[in-house]
Image (cartoon, rainbow, N blue to C red; front, side, top):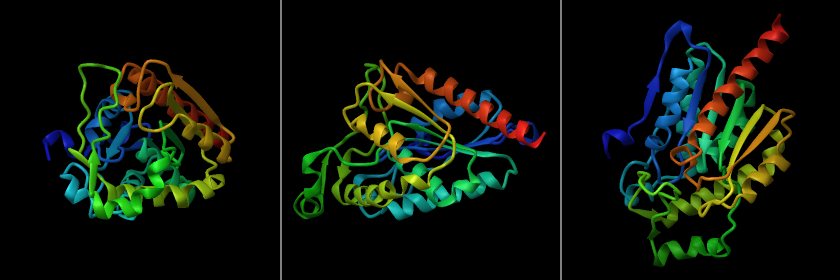
Length: 256
């Protein structure tokens, strides 16, 4: 694990506007969230970006973890954010988006809104159903990381993708997708037009499944899967800050 892989947090004290919990994706680590977190910090928001169990380590370590452990760490980060006494938003990339959706299903009353970047909610790969058997004969496959249009940027990921952990990720989707209607919090969605890891149709399924009345979606024309490190990153960063400001203003108007 490198220093960049470690979780990070920005606490601005009493002057902060709200807190954002940022969740990285499968096989990745908080480094993919850091530029986003720094932008939000500079815009006046607290940020908490946890490192999910097994991530930032070897694929063999990740293989021994499950989606329930990843979710438990995200829920712990939510509790850490709530302890700061300000409205809390959650944002996630890919599997991080899956986990944030699950968080909104289970604890939507604790959230002021969601920001999702290329969220995953189903497996579009036809061979995916073979994973539960494949893991016994092929414990790992090639890395899925660094799907970026920018040629000079690399995402930090495990060197291989553990099939056992992928099987657990599929189970997360199986419990989360049927309960999307429980998601009612405001939603800001960013989807890459071209994504070689998560089919863009995942975003369409999310939009159709949630019951959020406030949903705004943006297509990212120049970015691939890891959009938080790609050409359209600034669109995500500024768009999420504006979304949070807007939701906070709405909440103030209701109380006034």
